[in-house]
Length: 161
Image: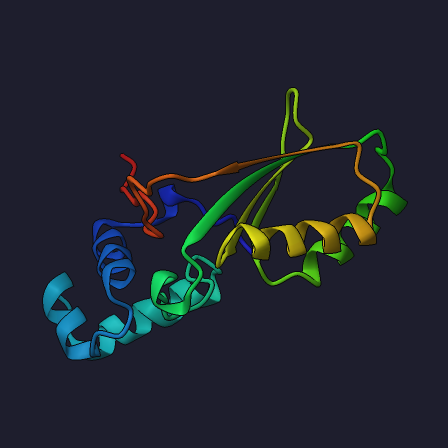
């Protein structure tokens, strides 16, 4: 597949991606009016962006508070294990725990950073105990978010050039 970068997008693609990030449930007629294309041309653009992997999927964004998942925990992890076997075991462990919604391998002082959503501290404690029962960790530090000050799933899409 060809290289897919922001430089491959024109201004209509950028407008279309921006509109879809705001509301992917919009009718093609609405989207086409927003971006200034016919409905068929708009649909073809969306299909092309999906085929290129720029649009990876469409999801419903749920309200964590209404699902009793109002506590967000950021967990830093250090390990003394830096080999493929440990990493595979760690990935398998994390995949089993749905409360872990994001995981990053980091540079610097911390090896991994994860975001966990839970109902309360006791719920987080159960997640923590499950994780450490599945994989050996050297140091785990948890910080509980006091207030969410910004949240978005929208990426800053801009046309280059």
